[in-house]
Length: 331
Image (cartoon, rainbow, N blue to C red):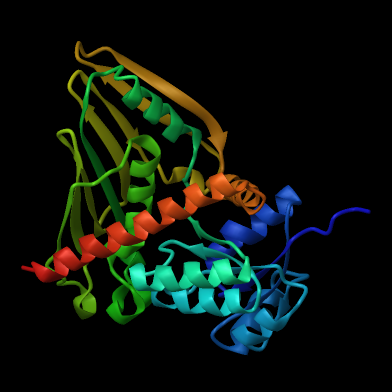
């Protein structure tokens, strides 16, 4: 007998749900998407009507009561992630939640405890996670091809036009840091042994409604290596990583580009003598890759799953520590 395809229900009628779930699910044939619930029924109806055969649910609870749904995908504002994840877990659903997974250790511990009790899995969706470029960088670091790693510099800035909705409401988890830190932290976990010995955060919190429109974060990774994130909402878009070594550097520009379509990812390597090499990774689409990866984690063995949980827990803890440091020392 043919195995039934896992079915996803969307908690949030959002553009990201279209890109991260609906399109890759249909193209891959790995999942079916049954329906959507939103902040109001009319919103869910409008979303579903333009994306047949989706059905609209009257509210979030109605979707979670549907026994035909195996997995809940959450793409609501950041402050709702933990609450909705817990509701989905208690309904017996696996959960995919857009980054950030939640807003602190207390929320994570509640989610993890409930998930274990219900024997379901909760996965944070970070679209660029585990892309081959991360394995290439990790190999160059561990092999010390360019000498010892001294620092990692990440810049992520979204255009000011994105500064609206929940992003300008601190009570909903808005601001630049919570919007971008998962990309930075996951990259660090994937490319180097991340055993922090100290963290720092800084923001004036002078954006609309007191959100962090600009934020600087840093992690002392030990062994003389420091990782820095500069993020914010600015006039121009930017998404770049640079790894600086004692004998060279690696640069990666526009690392979020494969979110919009299938694009290659190029690492620009420069050695101590100025010799340059471009390491090209074939074109791929982050969201299609992400859904395949998540599918693998739903069937992963215990060791692989526990490793993912540890990484998720570390990201939550580091984000909380860095954000609290910035609040404590705000200018």
